[in-house]
Image (cartoon, rainbow, N blue to C red; front, side, top):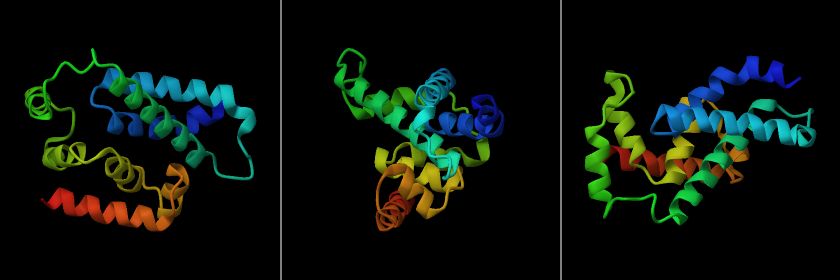
Length: 155
């Protein structure tokens, strides 16, 4: 049963992982961790609902948990401040298409709650209700975050 889901949703899930993560190795790990959690929790899936929002929610939560672990591990962040980190990250070649490089950089610099909302809505083509369900927030909050994200990107 899970094999069918992997065939049907695997490419879109991997695209989401690549969008969320800075490096393809991290995206590979997130992709694999997401499917492992799906296997572990497939009995909790409500088959009366769509699978993709449930899968996306698992992926986003797995990503958030990873960020929390990194934030708690002081040895992982070797940068003295955000500017130093930005300089190092800018020196690394981006994997994004050249046409949208500036847009991707701007999205990458957004605070995490806005960045994830933008990625789910614009890059994963989820509607407002699906984004709200995935993130566990009201639809109005999704609209507010998208609006704030647009303003931040323009700046």
